[in-house]
Amino acid sequence: MSDHVSNIHGSAEITVEPNLQRRLVVAPNTDLSIVTDASLIAPFEEAEKRSQAPSAKNEHPSSITSCPATDDDGRIATEDEVRDLLNIVDRIPTRLWVACLAGILERFVWYGATAPLQNYLQNAPGGEVPGALGLGQASASNIVNALIIGSYITPVPAAVVADSWLGRYKTMLYAAIIESIGATILFATSLPPTIRGGAALGGVIPACILLAVGSGAFKTTVVPFIADQYDQIEPCILTRKTGEKVVTSRELTITYIYNAFYWAVNVVGFFADSTPLLEKYVGFWVAYLVPCCCMWLALIPILLGRNHFSELFQIADD
Image (tube, rainbow, N blue to C red):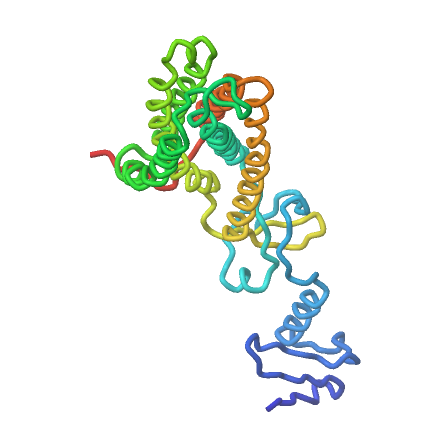
């Protein structure tokens, strides 16, 4: 039931509505200039400001422009501010995109190296379908399946190592080195002289083992490591050029980051499927040279960001 407060100098009528936010609604024709009690005017002015503010929608970070720093900028938001103000995607540090770049390149290497592998193992050279080792469908499928299974089993022990011993950065770095060595062996043993000399099979087995271990350990650490680079835990107040105050949201920011990351992974996965075309029109050595180079390139952002990366969960020293 609404309560009415009237006879404030005989002209103002206030309607108090009981709801979740306990709003005060003033009649449109009320003249506040004659109200002398400041405690009564303040709620009306605050309600008017909120009514003129834009609707609360989640916005893309590119639409956020900060104004000169105010006392509120960077302050941790209160629960009421998180509820009432516009929640936005926060500014994303450069080191986070550097970590994403390493993860995207590694995914290109995995898809690019495994796409031609069945033909490489199954078919003999000189046939209608490109081939190198001529092991037959059954043996080739067993090797490829073992490679894939290994890449799905490795993340379990790798996660334990990362979270309890080495930490995510070192685990990711060592995994990238292992995968780079595997990609290099696969490329080196796919050169025509090596295939003709009969050394290709002796190289492809250890290469597959290294690829499975390196890829499995890398992908299980790079995903949480990316989130570690956004180290703002609490929601904070930002002020736009218009003077509007907004609240940064970690949940929205992390969602935006992973949407961008996996979108890019899907794009490079599409282009990685071009390696069978290289296999067909040039040779297996070129098809494996491209992933090999990309894996070594993936090490560059990892090493360059060494002094800039952050880990939210550090491994305690004994």
